[in-house]
Image (cartoon, rainbow, N blue to C red; front, side, top):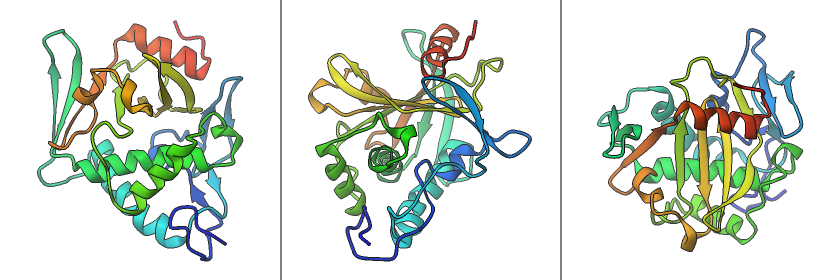
Length: 243
């Protein structure tokens, strides 16, 4: 069978994660299962390590190529020790709170983010049905296999957080949804209190995006969302009656 990433004839894994397993770390409940949210309902699934897709990736692509990106990024997102990486709570001139992330490897982290978006698109699982990258799917595949993170405006991803609002539910993963921002196509997914927004239309990327997404200076900003915006996100993407 043909691996969807390297396009080589190989034996394929029976279980490849669409969302990397470490991103479910804080989603699991007392039964070590996780809560899955879609547009119609929120349900507790009897799934213990996340959603799998059979026969899409070979072991080398899944465990080695993507695995290295995931290992690095898990330390960035969950506080592992990486030399030269630092974080600080900051406020800009407009009063916007954010976490400044410094020393984050642009290539590794950007490709990690792209690998998630790409897997959403290639998946046949109903949960990811709203993600269809079309011609961009092949472009991102080439970026991944060639270890090329491209320019900052090539499929940038902005990350926001509502974790400071401890009373709001964050042990949930939402369906990735397609929407438009300033006329451009975006995909947004909520995972573990973090909101990931991927921008597809290069010529229609909002001005603020290069300021907050990972850049070639190895810096990025994770925006701390105000409560009102956080509640709106939860209502929209999880259909939960939060006040």
